[in-house]
Image 1 (cartoon, rainbow, N blue to C red):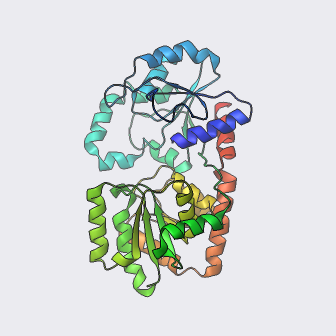
Image 2 (cartoon, one colour; image 1 turned 60 degrees about the horizontal axis):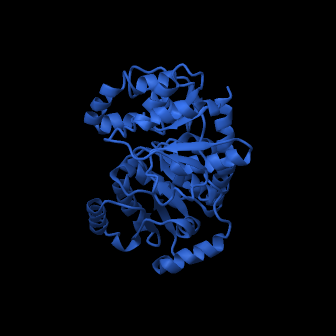
Image 3 (cartoon, rainbow, N blue to C red; image 1 turned 90 degrees about the horizontal axis):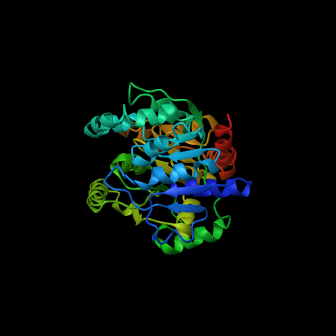
Length: 365
């Protein structure tokens, strides 16, 4: 989300618009001085709600300089404060929920959902109701949002996110990645890239990989991303018990050239997540012309399926096993078609230019 705000904002400035960001960051945080946009860090808020008493004052003092205010995220004070500050001002505000209304949270964390109901009628419901529009990053997010709370009244619009163009020196980046992880040289592998967390279906992926690879002993799986140590140990034990320990590679969190090298070096990107609002890593994979193997809980699955950018199955063990089986059975020519279409989907839907245009369209109607 933070990267999308930055990259889209930079593009809007390049297009001739004025963009400023107000945040609840520490003014002394290292990234503040070199931030690419004009930034107003008001300091961290109090409590888990991030109450920041200076926020309403700042918005009221500065709102007349802007044609519109965009709120990123809900369930914390900044969204409530924006509605409070702009009431009666004539300045419209727009809200990106960023998947925070997905009913998966209601079913998975019922006690947290009950707590949210205490806030909903007098806080978030009114924030969304009074917004000029609530901006959803894809059709599936829009469809799911109305399933979490029966008290729901919003003006819906679509405004997909985008990501920056990957570096074009793919051969050099691939070589650098394989030099850093030499065990992967000349080995075909699927890439999981993201937070290693139960929500992401990592356990399903290991089981499905083990079920499919007796007929494909040359295949490998790379798990890249940060993780809780206890959960990571559980997954490694799972891989060991499944007999795939030697073909699953845990490389930790990767950034920059290493991340792009991993994307360029893999055969396909895989994410059998139970809930994923947009999935920037999915879009980055498509930008690198990599087919995506995803569950139907990754919310851009409809667009991917419509475009033919990858394969989609349910977020179950049966579904994940079918996902990998379908991939391993794909002829080389069909894999090339998927790769080509993945890149076209990125170019048509998910560039930073497309994201900036979508936001401008959403706030001008």
